[in-house]
Length: 472
Image 1 (cartoon, rainbow, N blue to C red):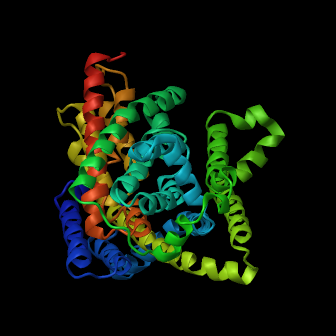
Image 2: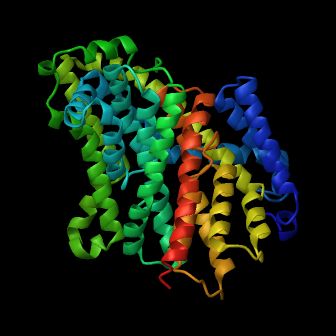
Image 3: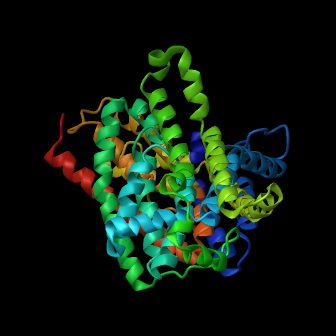
């Protein structure tokens, strides 16, 4: 790892600036494919890292290790997300092709009215997003947004951002998501209270994000574009069918809701002593609640549904799933490359340099925690890594300090900070853009703006509550 002399210097920040500029020019100006751009800039970050800072040095040369470690880190990220993205893509194409997504949309419109269906999507999505990773959550719900756009003929930006608003805040703020779960332990705040406080504190920023999404939608709605998997013509033919030809509502929501239920049950049991409570029965819940297994179950249900509705043979099902898996492959490559880029920035000493620069400063600690989390999110892309790194730093900063408010406010500040400035090194950025059909520029102008607005709203909320209700 970089020495203190390295991390206290200007060079890690220069590395970050060079890499950020390079990736923006490559993707937005030169139109280089995102996978190639991200891999290239990840290697560049390794080349710019201090000598001796990359794993495997000095046994191999610094230049060789810049390439080897990039490939290794890409594989690590791919191993975590590959199966999930592939299975979620299968579920997505099956619920679209079977008419299940359109069935859910019709029930939404009937229950809430066309004017309020977007708000209903935010509300339902907030509850569904509590236990499940944001990337997985988005991939499961994006078919609803596409079907809604075809059904209503407008507001596609609003529907996509409704899903984003709902799932993003909970990912960085509410256990059993891994970031807030570990952060509660690091900051030594009660886990049960962190769930309650995190969920309640997330509501105002979500509503702010919803208002920003409505404003962005009025400024210019992004059109519904072709995405690999289900063509717009096929989607239109599905949405024009009589409701009597569509699957039942229960069968339509089961492939999406059952994996969420299984994952959330296993997560809560693991977080709150399920092994001790259930004894020998716990391994079964742990197994079927594993996100890979839960999504296998959801995918099997979705495939059964589309086979029954479309009267497909196995060969027809295979042909239907081919384009969806090809799409998943591209998304896996891009998100893995983005994760590798973030990890290479860490090897270059960016995270350590931020921590060192913040140490010993006489500043508002809530503002400091939020700022460092935002910088960490911007520099390496992962909200979970941002949460964990910032929480560990703040423990050192606050050691021996008599805080004028409860440590839970530092928990909130870090969680909200890890939400902000989502851009091209964030896997969620690419999942949103690719699956919704947004261009990189459109994703920056919509999702990135919504994310930072919710992050800033969360900061203001935390500062206000810490002053009015310090709970010392």
